[in-house]
Length: 230
Image (cartoon, rainbow, N blue to C red; front, side):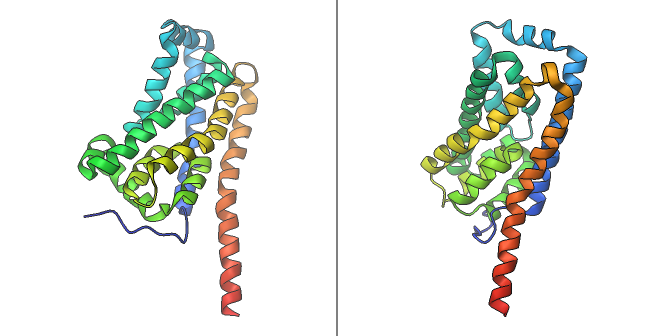
């Protein structure tokens, strides 16, 4: 059974947007609990004890989290600002996400559903199929990369199934549109050291903003349908 036919009418469903926002808030809470339990200094010491290999280990962890789609590296990404600094942490995050996402894209494109099922699991494959039916072309991928970053691992596999998206388009969108949310995550994680109480309101705001493009899309579509019916 092949993935559903591509749809161009709507880039994502409200369910997908809500899932992304909820996952984002859950990961934020998890990071705060981990840092409280381990301690910032201890966490930094563990990671940096690898010396020059620490950035490489972080990049590989980010990449692995994208290939093994149910695995989440969100808490580690939020800690990148504490461990490496904002700009290096953002760079390492983007490299890891693009590397892992591209592997997922190529696995789906060239090895097909059996290989994706092996890495993402049966439930993960079902979610990927759902996104294939909603993804459309590269414009929808831009939206997904900017606002659905918490589930972009699944979307990367879906993009591999979607023949309307080329590898070049995937790479450009992932790098250009992936940098802003990665920077926000890393920068906000860096604030945890001194301003932890400000983080949760910040991510509530980000979660709300992730709904804004979908709401605008629905409003414009309703307005267009109203004009067509009048």
